[in-house]
Image 1: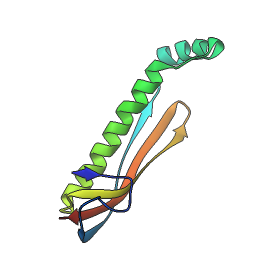
Image 2 (image 1 turned 135 degrees about the horizontal axis):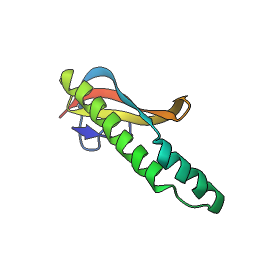
Image 3 (image 1 turned 120 degrees about the vertical axis):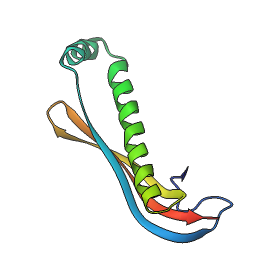
Length: 104
């Protein structure tokens, strides 16, 4: 599966537009890690546990978007975007979306 943020795939021609595809996941913070992260905000720096959590969430969301595209018979997703939002206290949603196409 080709995944690009552009509206075209370099060197390929879009033969068929399949439609909108998306994938998402909601990840919650671990209470123990949340306490340690709170301490980290005092001294500054990267909160590695949250970075890892969000990296994994992006992989899951993109994987679900790809599965959606495969069901439509697509071999590429163009115009891919990622967004995140807070859905409740201590939980964030990651959504990946784009346009499924068939390219040659």
